[in-house]
Length: 230
Image (cartoon, rainbow, N blue to C red; front, top):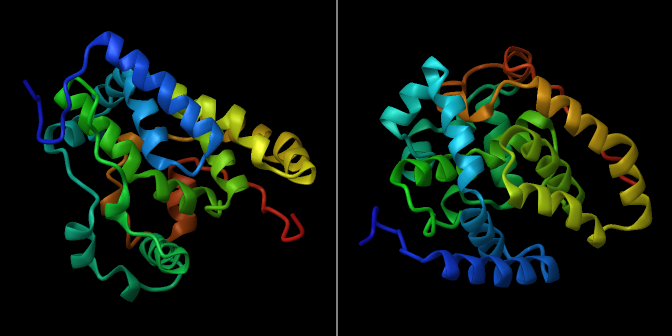
């Protein structure tokens, strides 16, 4: 019986098959968001439980687990983020979406997580991914995505993040791989460990906060700038 609207009940054997098939598709085409999403769900139970435990140990995290807010177009459209002053987090996020043509509702819905609360934790992780790009100062290029996956792997321990971080460089040029290895990975390992857990932040209350102030409060060290020559 489904545990939530989008839930697809699966056996352990089915999860193994989905994991193998999704990993194959994701490795062959890292842009297959559906494959990456399915892989994250069938392999992420232990990591999601750790993420939930961290949220339960934090007062804001407990409130988020209780309220289960969604960061979708329905809620964001009411905030008129593009009208916020330049330099605020909300304005920077609005520019990020418009510049790259992203839609907050394009994220895959969670289907294979067999726990309603953990399904929301996975949803929250997906819906805050683009906020990570803005807070860390990383573009949604292949190199920027891999760097953020390293950061997220440290913060969440999701196996899918680790796989993307390790396999993603195959799609990079030698120069990009060198910059990833010498600058971005050391940053991600350091910054991911030092930063506050992003899942325990009510990020929707911070849109009017100056971006640099929010970065400082969350102890987020912006990533090294990616050279335009790469």
